[in-house]
Image 1: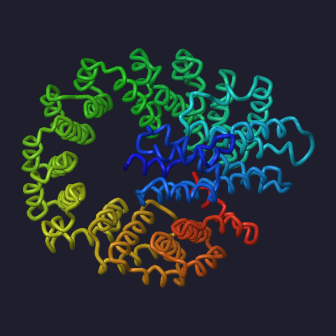
Image 2: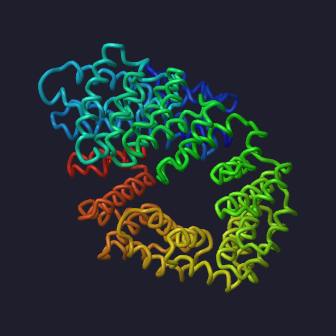
Image 3: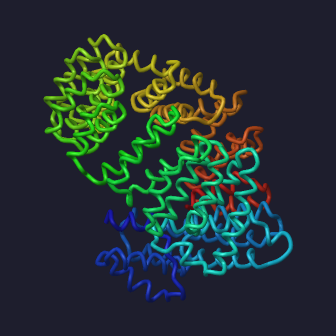
Length: 603
């Protein structure tokens, strides 16, 4: 019956033709004998039949209330989703450019097979129509991106090249190249450069590679090199053109280090067609002009190809190299592919003159022991004089995740002289017990000393330490931690990983404690970050009485608060099964945030 419930909750399929009530009654009578595909077809037909026919029939034929509730929720979601989708399709015809682009973007986020033809038709009209606003390039890009997003989400083997004919591809390529060339001449281009570059990677050919290289030569920001590398790689992989990729590495007249970095990034991206013969050319890039990003890109490319090729003896040779970069890369590769036979070599590398090589060797040793489940060796690492080794041993035991390993981890928490080892131990204790659903036991093992350490982590000036503190409080935090979490949230100047993790911890504790008053108070706070988290918390816990103030937050002066409030409104209404009211409300309040939140929900 669990299988039936899951299918009912996730069913979105539709079919043509209206089934008869007699047919539905017969099929419902046999529902417990059906396979998954038959149940999916039945639920699709129930959607077509409508509430009046489907609901009484369901209640007569199926005795499991939970299954009936699941089908009803699926039907309601399907009907509401169809209404919202129809609204978006209608917006594609709207005269306002912003609304048409927004509709295309949202349809890409929630669309499926039935929307591919609709979007293709709109691309046709946008490409061939003359005069504003139908020839607006932003609309063409939005439509093409929507198609691409649907295909990617469905993991379809169909590509944009399959959907759009050669003439359309030619027109779209010309428009896209014109856009990214003009935008790249401005201050970096931003997303206006990125969007056409990504699409050109999907529909371009080898002629476009040189255009991307020209942009790189002109020295634009790092992210443009990243996007250009991905686009070039997509083209070369699609065309199986390894020689062109390899030839990029020979370009020494790029005029700036970003061009050389781009060439290395391409080799990393196309690891699936790179070969052992590319390694020496890649290694020649090291130290080329002292640019750190070039060396990092080269290292990633080498590691990608080595790991895929699996040439173990070649890696071991690298570990004996006179060149420190080669030794460091060798240790990194062994962390991904090595086994116990490599441990003696890595132990020697622990004595290397270069700190970076020693660090990578320690990481590799711990990762090999973790991968092979060698608990005893990991425990031995906890007794090492080197704090980095002890920390890696703790992390390995955490990854294995057995409660039996915790005794030595708790000892590190209480006795280790290194604060980073203590933090790693606290993290391991919580994570291992979280998997076993025994958080109360974790609190007991941490004792007051460990809990205090975690609370201090939250306020640490190092961001990664603070993030770890918030992550742990999300699991073991209590009501007394709420004020300190709100204080940290209030210091946020932008949406960041720390802001997100701290907000998640606050919401998780409120849910555990059933504390609804604290989030409601936060909506009147002067700090945007506090209001945003308050709205998000109400979305998880709120009810009908919260809708009024959440709707007021849709007019907040801060965009992030408006987004959080819109998501909260949708979550509250979804729990009540009344999303249809929000779809009607859109025409009254015209909230872009509410549009986006509904699209995310239906997606």
